[in-house]
Image 1 (cartoon, one colour):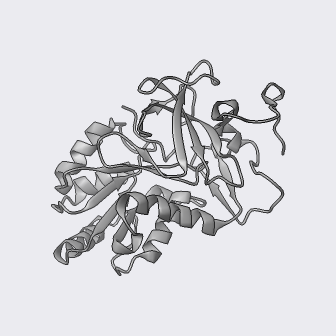
Image 2 (tube, rainbow, N blue to C red):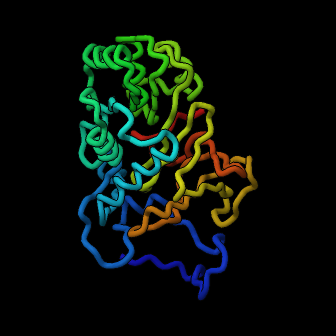
Length: 291
């Protein structure tokens, strides 16, 4: 597959704004890759139908894992220093989730036997959390939003040292909440001072993280900007809302310049907010909550 926009042919690129951003919707209809190689793994997004599923061809799974570990470590220190409890039922119930692949790697790197995946085992998970608290084990609870809310309702606890990280996504399971509402409910149920967030998608091989203040900070290989909604070639000033463009240099073998369907704001310090999604864009399981 070869995509060509004649109006974008440039003999020599001298600035980033001369490079067009590829709409991520093309990952649903085309095999996006640079060069001639066979994929060793294929990541796929969640979706209501096969036609709404994006696929990201992966040339080197080890590269994805090493970069994901590098992204996390840049914000939270070595993955070997933490216990990872992954509450990702909707992702575990399908094939091709990049989030599950990343979580599995973190779990395998953790020296703590308590690390692992959980489905709807609220009491079992509560017991593991109690054990980690009692033994002062530095623990990360990584969960999809609707499952974290169900845990909060079924088995609340008080673990102030716990790092709770939501990945977004109600996926039609529950009423949509703003991120502020979700975080307030989880903080009260779990006794933690803040709720962290992970920003990622099938089309990206890097992640961004938020420590709970609404701002995401991208990994070293990412750069986020905002574009005019009605003019995809025009960027908007820092702090003004627009559709998010992402440069992800980890996408070595596919495409590093992506035009997402997320609405947000980009700031001068490199951070960004996510405010929602463009109209007519599909609702996917890894979506962040609309504010």
